[in-house]
Length: 350
Image (cartoon, rainbow, N blue to C red; front, side):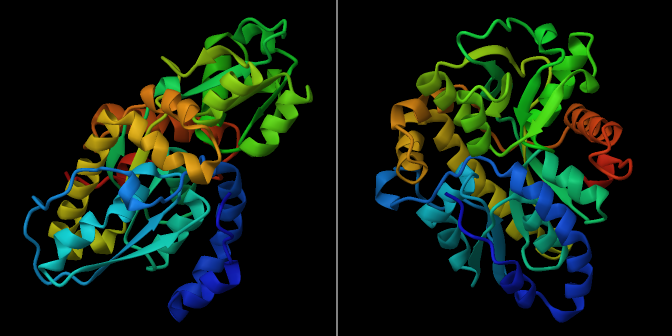
């Protein structure tokens, strides 16, 4: 479902002075990134989605090309791209938008590090992994998503009833993903440690096959794969992320973009918020938008949409503290090589 990412072509497009630095960290980031790829949401025919139109953004002056990295998984940026509202908002100031699709968050953030893009959106883990690898990332806003949009599931006939029953079991999840943290947190809440289970590091597609084939005992997964597992495979939730993991998304920008084009960034975030507000109020329309490319029935996608949240919100101390807890947990299991201070990567753009 993902567009193929050509590493050779990517490096050739970078400014020469960035190539050596980028190559050093790209291998680590991309390896983690393949397992972090969120659901492959997609762009669709703009006429199928009736997002609000009109330009009420703040005026901008002397704007060049704003370069946005996106994944088809990032519903809001995909919707924004399909509608062309940002281009309209910037046109009066001579601005334009260049969109580049990435298969996962880490290579997107490496491109930001190399000066190839200005703005992007990822889940919780990629900016942590990028910061630990020495890539300067700047959080500018967050998306609440929803703790109910990810869960640990078992087959409907499984004897496993609660998290304590996972001791000695094989649990599938994407390495370094938001559900990796959910598993860590859930085990701790049940008095277990990470070493009490056997992790099976699998992408969502491979994890589903292993789950349905009985090759793993449980699966930690996010929507809409979670909704598909419930509706198509009869999966039973034993624990969602409520009270255990925030399951947030983050809007990220290059420091140079923040410094040189603060008004353009403000306009961009205003347009993102308009689309986010639309998505929050129109789950059925968003489901129709996602359905053709994902190959998932719109009714299942609508179930997933109804339990997720949307927003473009400023970073608070509470949000930063929770993101720091995820970073610390990833260091404890040696997923990242060093401790980081998340607050050092936060920009007060809103």
